[in-house]
Image (cartoon, rainbow, N blue to C red):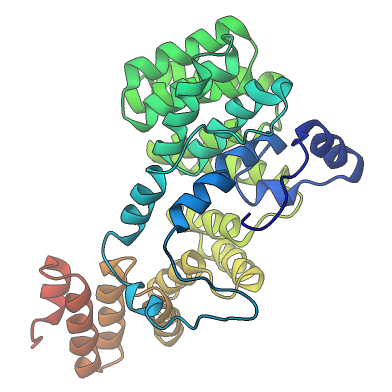
Length: 355
């Protein structure tokens, strides 16, 4: 930070000990940081680089406050995030702070690359992986390399990396999980399911494997297996978030079990009143069961708060308005959808005059 003294060396081992002693978990996990060292992925610029970046800019201090009125004009500017990342990249040096203890470097690089991959930040992940080349080989490094290859859709390289990780640590549930994901993407369902089963036999509460079991089943439209897997997933969560109830409700809908789906979706909305997924699924449920007024309320909520997510919601709401005998509202919402999603065939059809 500008104007502050250099802090003492970072000690991730102290953070780890504090986490274990005090039961800290959500602070890291809510930021896609599963290990204290993963915080390194959020490091961009040291003090010197920040000063270089800010050189020539107007000073904004407590006793000379600069009021800025131009920032709101950039909120919807196309490509602004990419421009900012490119600007910062020109000042970035090493991926880790210089005051990091030497004994923490490899662990910070591995955890930092994992966090960057969780954030889908390929630029930062590439920087960390490049730095890892100077460190001893390890299962963590190979898993990170495999995940990066998977992000690039290089399935062959990803599989090789995960298999290399398993040579380092043959029972690694993480390596087996990512290998199963790669095999699933490659169409090798038998191997993917076998590796998921191998994980769950040794680690029945390993959430990524339970997620694989649910997702693989849903992809092959085996929704009964997906339902069991989702219930198992939620059973290992101390307090499942609203999104998990939305997912469970959606699976019940796939099985045409509206009686089970409705209370689950309502539970999700009770946990998060602004849940996109639960309101959308409820809208579909109420429309399918003839409760058109309730369907309208939920679809209107989605259109109001999430207008640019999915053009199908506008078409669904238009259908609900027509069922209620309001053709004018149906045409208006279809035209609004077309403004956001031009040339969408479903919306064009919904916007056409109905006899």
